[in-house]
Image 1 (cartoon, rainbow, N blue to C red):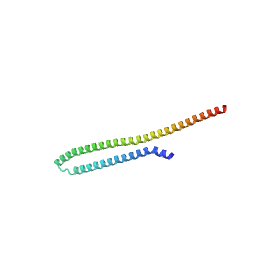
Image 2: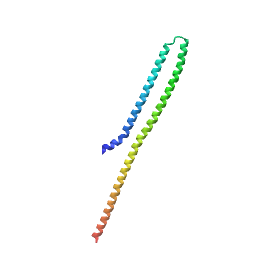
Image 3: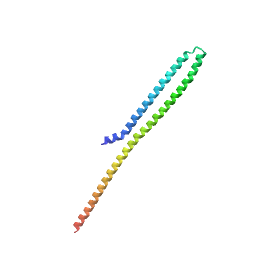
Image 4: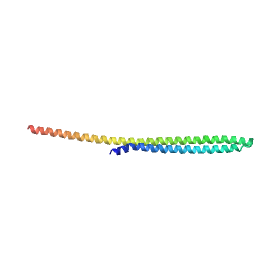
Length: 143
């Protein structure tokens, strides 16, 4: 019985930890992908820089730099949108986990309160019957 209550109490925390680990893994994957993309672009730019032979090559390199910078900004914007989406998803799921746990606690509290009330009314009626029985016995003995 005690371990069941402990398990029920710990369940929302376990779900929250799983959710946290899953989200951290997704963020880590996003960071690794962003790093790979950045390293690939840096490699391409280094290779392009080594192929500059004249002024025209240099101008093309500079125009490619501007395009590459736009690509980096676009990718960073996509990543920020994805991180924002993940954060919203995490918040919603974490809220659900703790609301479910709170609802279970409240329903268990209501059941315990109902059981306590039933026990109290049962003992009250038993006490009333006992008092009535004593009064009746007292009445009979006095006659």
